[in-house]
Amino acid sequence: MRLSPSRTLVPLLALAALTVGGCAAGPEPAESTAVAVGGPTTADRGTPEAASRADAGAGVPVAAVVPGPTLRHTQRWKAAKRRIALAREVERTTRAAAAQNPLVGREWGVYRGEADQSWGPYASSTGTDRALLAKISERPKAQWFGAWIPDAEIAGRVEDYIANAQGGDPDTLVQMAVFRMVPWEREACGRLPSAAEQASYKRWIDSFAAAVGDTPAAIILQPDGPFALCVPGGSGLPSSLIAYAARAFGALDNTATYIDAGSADWPAVGQGGVPKVLEFLIPAGIEDVRGIALNSTHYGATSDEVERGAEIVEALAARGIPDKHVVISTSSNGRPFVFGDAPGSDPDNATVCAAPGAQACVTLGIPPTADVANPRWGLAASTNALARQHVDGYLWFGRPWLYRQNSPFLRDRALALARTTPY
View 1 (cartoon, rainbow, N blue to C red):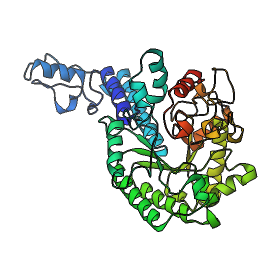
View 2: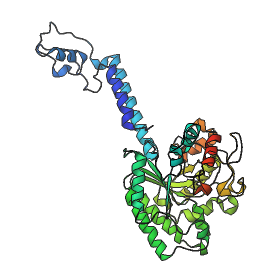
View 3: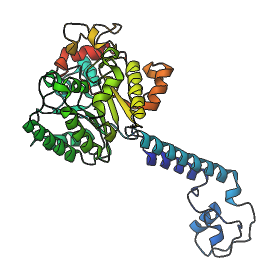
View 4: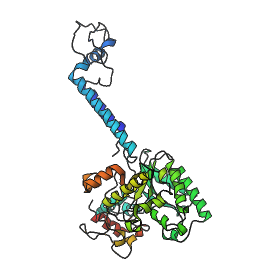
């Protein structure tokens, strides 16, 4: 539900107005209630008595002047003023929360179209299957955009996606993941982007940013970010390209961008941990964006991801880059485990839970939300305290319903994910 300051304030003001006979929003009455023959005077406008006389018509004689307490001295007026003050405080608090967290105060859009591989199977399903698949298809998720979309087509694709997800409401927040670096993942460990690939990357990013424009958006920038650590010769080239995108997206007024920083188990402590994260995060332009994204392709426990996120934010602050925030993908971690201990033969396609009570297997986690400290999530008080301070939202930018989190959509896998989730 959208939490709009104006929609919060108006009903309370209306209630206050009703409490005092419709006069709460008007000017305070003067001290005297003396009424001159011929209708209400300037002194008594805004009182119920004046309103009734005005309704009766100007010029009707009044038998006598009736002294009495002014409206602002009555209990009803005092109660109305308290209600107005409360409404203003609610508005102030809501605006402050929205300023602190760009994901709060807006409806989150749901894309309903063929670009989401889960949509077609859901739309054609019925009965129990449809109800289960709705847990995936009818929830706000980040659509992935990458090099498989040509430079000349990316702007149109983004515009179409935004129009669909917003459903005609330009204030609705849309979510996207930008996976544009070429080469990336394991290929990035063997070679650097060519000059042509670099130029193409920048054209694509420029077009993407122009298409987003002033749309309220949350962007996950370059999932699997730690692959920047394995590039030949420790080159800073891939990070510099990500920084190019960070500057382009960071310049958009209504966009919150989060650079992928791996997960709680990547880089693990034995791989360098948080200090190693900073080695690619700072050159990647973290100072120009809202913060970091965690757990995009892993299955880490939400509590561990919150702790890792807080550690990264604090480490950045110690390096002179303060006020960064975190989003965590909870699409895959309903029964969390370390990536290296993934059940099955392929960690990218780890085994789905066979039953609701199974442990250390893949199933849907906390639904997408900015209400990160809700007791429903079953997290410890210490985790909730860190989340309130550092985490903007639990989002779904991981895609466990796809084969190897890529393609195609696996219907039976998706049904099992939805059937076994503890949330």
